[in-house]
Length: 581
Ligand SMILES: [Cu+2]
Image 1 (cartoon, rainbow, N blue to C red):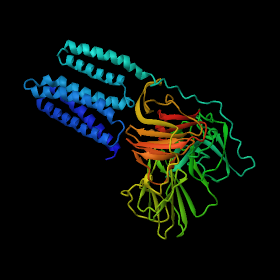
Image 2: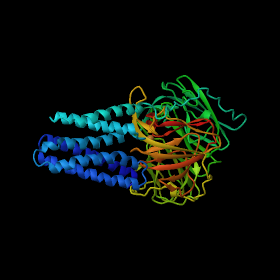
Image 3: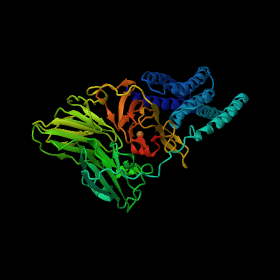
Image 4: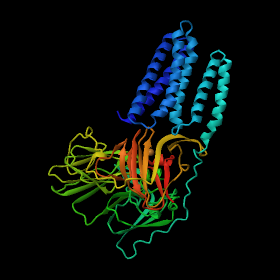
């Protein structure tokens, strides 16, 4: 069982336990004896089962097991300790166990609410609030059911409630008075690269458009009226110069070169490296193509909406003249329908083929290449060391990620399937790929030693969900270290530092992590060192419960976005910044 599925199981069992206790309480209030005993027995079993899931989570190395032990376990113990003896003594009126059973239900529910609503980091104030809620609800039930709470219980409630109110107000203040990110609005001029050098010039005009996707017209936002936008290609050493114009995208556009470690002023993040380009305006991007590989570009202005609506395209930088067949496959979901449209072409046997797979959606896609052995030559634009041939193996590409698959065309047809849908083929192939094993890039290829023995800076990022009360309207935000954008403190580094990030996912959803301006080297996942080819990534999925350690050298000064590439999550708080001092 993965940590993610253990977490899900633990959540379901906790909900069942709470429902069982509350249902039992209601049944006993209604004097339904057999139903009461049945529900209470069920709740007891579920509460005991949680002990098993919590122990399993601790053994799986889940970072927050201690927190479950501190919050869920005492409340569950209190629930069982109060409810069970009363049940055993309830020989007469079953109604007498109503309050103890309801107390057990409130205790279990409040632990659940702390987990779901508050998230990380748990604090004493939150714990007290939870206890106060339980005591207050119990007191109210007591009264409603016609019994008077004892004077001791009433006084205890009052004391706990006041203490919780005092400490709990700390909740509405940022954890350490985190300052908003001091965005640099004195945008630097575009670097003066490219004078007298070979230059590849492109113009991209953003505008609303109607595009046809599998025979249906879809309202889109498009570069040059096409989705994806034009494919930009260059050769290493070229200067790339792209003029971005905005025709009528009211919310503004920019160009972010995903995975391309451009100078900060060219990174295309509105409010951080430039102002959004509004209708009628233009902006010229210029950078030297010094890294070969598969990349993509997309708007970073209201990026969740903008990218989903179609403002993206492919950027390919080749090391030299093209040899063999080079196919780009940018996968996207537009208006609920998958792109690209399926394509079939005949390829002569023996032709070297490179499939450049790009995931431009906000969630992971599964890719399977049937009919040939292949190698994964590169991930996120960086060549792998010693990739071995793979057969009948699928790859999972995170949001924003790229894999280059290479093979020599066999005499028989091959087909590339994305989530079981054929998108590219050289003829008819009928293979079921759904049961194929998935490649783990951390064990693929040939290892080489980590280039650093010490780290100048170490940061921990706990990815989670929680109530964010700092905005005008409270929201259920995606958080980093308990805060949501713009309240997450920036991570400050100096030029030349070797920086280590430990990224921990405490939530129930996958977070594809993406640091701008740098590729990070994967050190370990869940405590196991990466054992394959060095992996220099710009996009990687941190699944529920996982812990990733990655490192990089701070060699590209500026203010860089560092965010989840599920862009809805990024918009809902999961964005912070890396800042050079
Ligand atoms: Cu996310």
